[in-house]
Length: 131
Image 1 (cartoon, rainbow, N blue to C red):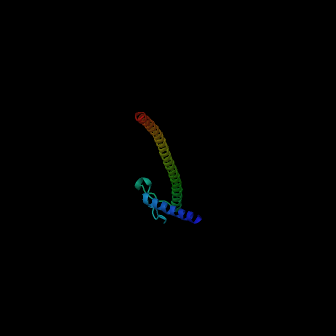
Image 2: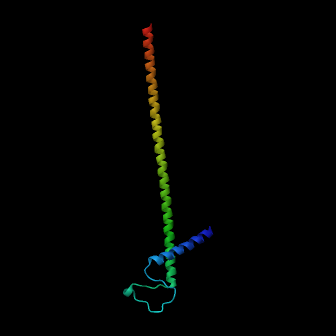
Image 3: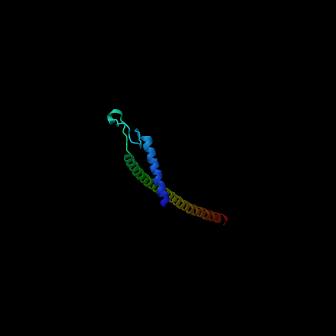
């Protein structure tokens, strides 16, 4: 468990560095500057120190971990809602089948009674005619 956490931290730092290098539009150098930095109003370029880069990486890492936790929570919530929806669907289907079976049972009893009356009346009529 500890080994995978360390690996995850390393990967998140690598991802954070990659995001910084690809998304930000200012150069980052680890070497000291040889000339005076230009003011931000002239060229909109700012140079960062190693400490500032490390702080940015830490901030991005913390934000990424928070986003991962939030996404995991939302995914768990969505999975729970989906399972709840499936369960309610199964319960509705079960209720529909029970109602259908009850209706068929009533229809079957009614048909049995009607056929019993018809058979009794037919037997009575035939018995009267034959007599």
